[in-house]
Image 1 (tube, rainbow, N blue to C red):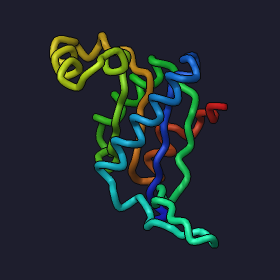
Image 2: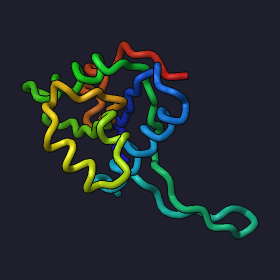
Image 3: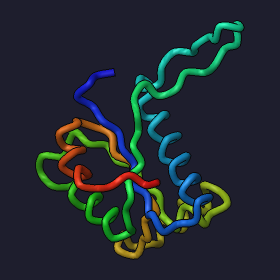
Length: 139
C-alpha cells in the first residue's frame, strides 16, 4: 500500500457502543468493496491455520458529531479534495431492515435532513489530514 494514502473514520461519539461498532463495520465493508487492493493476502500462522487477509494499514476512528460529519462531507465537494473517496452512514440507513427500504427512504429525504452517524475517508494523506488532523481518537 502506498504510504501517501490514508483511511480514517469519523463517528458520532455520543452513539451507543453497538451503533458505533455497526457504523464502523458498515463503513469498512464498503471501503473493502471499492478498494480491494487495500486488503492483504491471506496469512498462515505457525500451526498452519489460515487467516483471511486484513487491511494493510491502520484505520483510526475519530470522534465526531453529526454536524462535524456534515461539515467534512460538504468540504469534500470543494476544489482540491477530488482525491478523497467518502462513504457516509446515516440514521436513515441504520434504521432500515433491507437495502430496498433504504433506497426508497433515502430517495425521499433531502440531504439536509440526514443525520450522519459516521463517515469514512480514503485518499491522499495530505488532504485527509487537512480534513481530520485536529480530531481526537474515539476511545
